[in-house]
Length: 148
Length: 148
DNA sequence: TTACAAGCTCAACTTAACTTGAGGTCAAGC
DNA sequence: GCTTGACCTCAAGTTAAGTTGAGCTTGTAA
Image 1: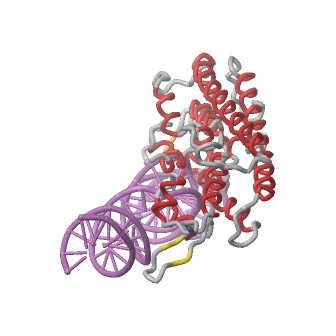
Image 2: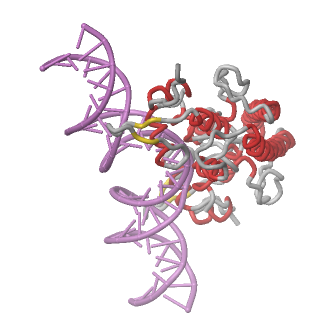
Image 3: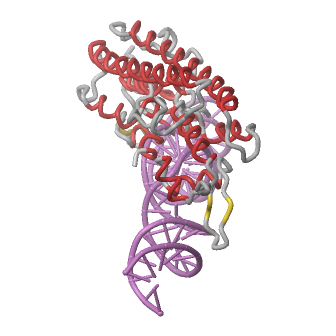
């Protein structure tokens, strides 16, 4: 028996745990692809499941859809991403995570030092005014909104 | 000579490094307070500087304005927050930061384990589908949008 | 007293990442 | 053949945290 290769949006949604509307959205953003049946309905290849999985993980790591899209562009057209592809992406993303963690640690240590101090001087307090972006990084919408 | 107690919005903006529009916004959200001159202009007490400082630090820690507002509500009315007040808030926030850091670490370790694995099975991959909210926490807008 | 900077209000716009809704089509079972 | 659930498109709404702009008022320095 021939393997069921094609998936409908509903099936992809169910298997990936992502809403149908989100899948439409990803497709509009160019993160995933589909072809259409004669009746204009979407059909997805199996590779879409892995792509969606990658998208969600990357999002949890704090990477924006735009960045994820750019990374996915680097993958060969319409092919199921291989282990090697995933290797490259996840390594890069892990490094980003590492950075984010160390920034948060700095912030925490700063907070710890300042507990009991209460100075909060704009000029003197080590927590303030030292041009650090720290936790601001990678917070999605907030980033663009907070930066001027 | 009597100390200059009152500050205009512009002065607060300059001293706190926050835009005038943001101060208006914080006031509309109830995070800070002012009284008005006969000509309807805002005047701030000195305590506003410390409040704004607290607000910005908390934001860097990834706390939403809504949460910050709630925390500030617990401070005595219109009084300059004391060292003790700051102590309580910063300790709580640092604990939150600690949690966030450890969640990110878990994510990173998961990523590391998965590098070279490439399985990404929804059922089996340790990175997926285990009900962890991880980095999603405290990402402002995304939180409400992503949770259904 | 007259500029002109600084303030005021209020509405609308911005970004990311989706969701919701309206109005219409497709497909599969009975 | 008909009902029903799954799809489709496209526009508009949502949230957070502000920013921008228009139109009008205050305050202050020369």
